[in-house]
Image 1 (cartoon, rainbow, N blue to C red):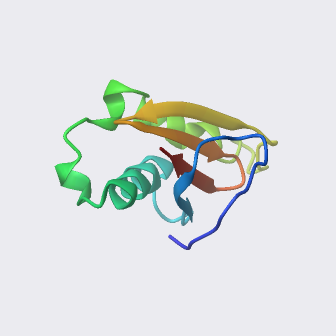
Image 2 (cartoon, rainbow, N blue to C red):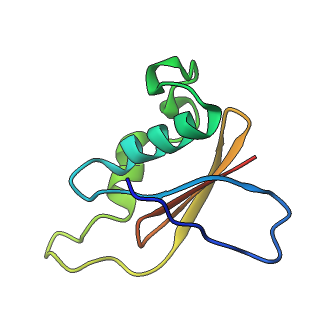
Length: 98
């Protein structure tokens, strides 16, 4: 994952970790890695499985290309994992906020 910072002047939460997921890995993996980085833990040490908060398969498919290969439109999804607010954008940005 590469680092990117997304600033939202209306957001009062500090960006703890941000990344762009590599399309060669599942989006759910990128989310777990970003939250683990924010918590300064290894992904296996998180203690709370991602599927307790959001269906990993649904997340992986949400912004994937359509069946005909055309990319999906814009959008984002927000959920909490541990004590972090996670925002996943359709263009591949994953932002983790405290």
